[in-house]
Image 1: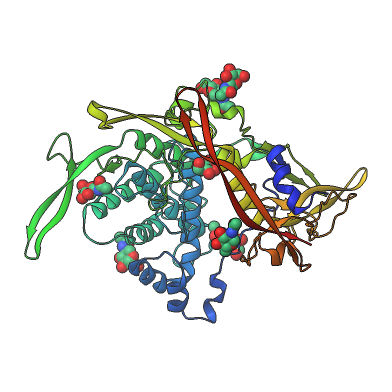
Image 2 (image 1 turned 180 degrees about the vertical axis):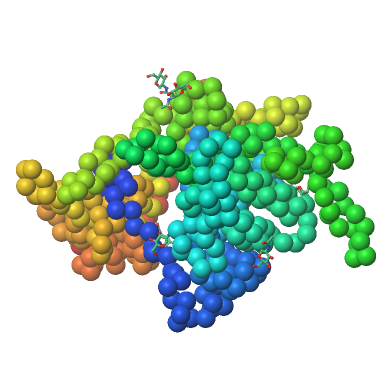
Length: 509
Ligand SMILES: *[C@@H]1O[C@H](CO)[C@@H](O)[C@H](O)[C@H]1NC(C)=O
Ligand SMILES: *[C@@H]1O[C@H](CO)[C@@H](O)[C@H](O)[C@H]1NC(C)=O
Ligand SMILES: *[C@@H]1O[C@H](CO)[C@@H](O)[C@H](O)[C@H]1NC(C)=O
Ligand SMILES: *[C@@H]1O[C@H](CO)[C@@H](O)[C@H](O)[C@H]1NC(C)=O
Ligand SMILES: *[C@@H]1O[C@H](CO)[C@@H](O)[C@H](O)[C@H]1NC(C)=O
Ligand SMILES: *[C@@H]1O[C@H](CO)[C@@H](O)[C@H](O)[C@H]1NC(C)=O
Ligand SMILES: *[C@@H]1O[C@H](CO)[C@@H](O)[C@H](O)[C@H]1NC(C)=O
């Protein structure tokens, strides 16, 4: 069993093996079943990430917020799926709330994210309506019993999108309601998202008749899968059009009033296209302030020529780094009951992490108007420093045993706290407490600290107090002699003086 101090070295040399995705522990949502005990304003104002307008809507109908949140979450999930191969992959650094914006406002990516969220909220509300979960809405039975021209009859529970559309419009537009270019853009894209949902509603039918003969059919409108909406919006994303804002004078000064196409001034954008106002970021480099994780460590496809190609995804920083950074997904699955099956994955995380970007400037007289960059190996010192830091933060783990055909066996590591929590792939882990390393013990391969040189004045690591484990220290006087002030004399000898320095050295008893 490795001990803490050995861990640094061992993980330096060996790969670390972790079980991923097991029992992913996320904190539970605080939720609205408590509506009866706390007033709506208390609940709504405590939800992180809501704008004042959204808090107001929440307070009107506090029971709906859970459903709206679900819409945001399903939209974010679909966004991640649609953009899994793109540089921007819908991941937001430092996101603190389900209701946070997923992209940099004004960009094409924001156009997609907004429209997706907008459709997602209509989606979950409408779904709840037709399941009878909301008192405010239900199925659309207006055409019940009427025959269609194609011979079937309206029946079942046609979705009634009206309520969800209205609520989504108010809530999602209420995120950013200063009347500026971003507001106009979001408003447009939110509407596009809602329209795509409506456009993609599907007809579902059921046969009636003797022994499945389908002599009569009843049909109703149903929601499509959210995937279908995501795919459609992704197409719109690729064809998004750039707009600029027309400002008109009002009695309170100039005010952004409507959007026009950037290329054909004064033409209004089509209500179904996604629009954007600002160029996209490259999304290449990590930028915490903008919530961009960067594409370092993303898995790219060498043979692909589209978004997930290594050239595009790695922003020409290169990808040959994969030689020493095996990037593999380990998909662990828990099989009922009780087995965990994983693929082993080998990563040398610290090395991968400290890969550095080196650049050369090009341009007239060193102006650096153009740069070419590539990924380079870090110095071993740098890797060492990172691992030293990790050593300080090393986590104690234990093996989680599961029954198998051959009896209980160690299956994966879990943090040595309550519950099962897998250690992060970056943490160093150890299973035993460290000894104090004070006394020599050949069997345990500990050299002890006797005779170690120590610093008399320091109270930290390296100080005699700590290093000598309270045994005290001996003082040695060392005389250091060397040749100095050497001069070359013509011809041909060198004459030096003898220099000498006395120095005190402290060694542990
Ligand atoms: C409707 O309510 C039931 C029972 O509370 C719940 O299981 C279901 O998930 C809800 N459906 C939606 C779409 O909210
Ligand atoms: C949308 O909802 C608001 C508040 O419930 C209501 O006042 C308004 O009439 C609704 N609009 C539509 C078009 O249904
Ligand atoms: C984004 O576009 C808006 C409106 O066109 C402009 O005011 C703003 O400065 C732009 N922001 C960036 C970061 O380019
Ligand atoms: C998106 O990219 C980030 C940063 O490279 C990465 O950590 C994350 O796993 C990616 N997300 C998905 C869904 O692929
Ligand atoms: C990489 O791209 C090629 C060409 O587009 C494709 O055939 C292949 O399936 C991709 N590989 C992976 C692992 O996605
Ligand atoms: C990576 O591996 C390939 C094939 O094994 C080899 O041609 C290439 O030189 C290696 N690159 C580095 C940086 O080691
Ligand atoms: C000993 O420790 C003191 C205080 O930390 C420090 O200033 C000094 O440079 C150290 N001496 C040596 C020889 O490292």
